[in-house]
Image (cartoon, rainbow, N blue to C red; front, side, top):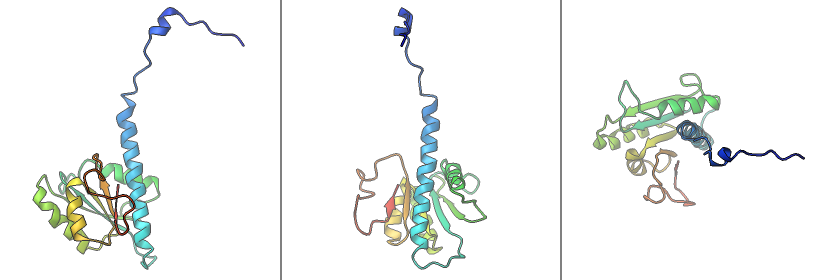
Length: 165
């Protein structure tokens, strides 16, 4: 086997930066992770004697969203669901609620979705505590960049805990 000689300048060259792809990869991982968690949450909810013909409903609360802009993670959620074969309005329904930056609205919005009997809740960090108080039966998927275990929002291997993320 023949060895390739490297020039002196090739030893000092730095590898190409990956910073351009990191945000894209992070968004792709977020899409897949949220969509997968939602799918598992729906499977659990659907397995609890739900009729087969029922279209699953996701309750989504954004702290910054409103009626015209549902928040920064919604398109990632939609794409992740499409990747798994779910099309909004066809075989899945997403109930959106946005607090428009008013954190005091979170408990009201979460309660509204619980009363609609959605199959799974997808929540940003501001709504998670409200969900823990509003329901013990609806699975909760957290969309957050903080460690939910370290902040006390979730526990690992705790029976009866319906929060994941």
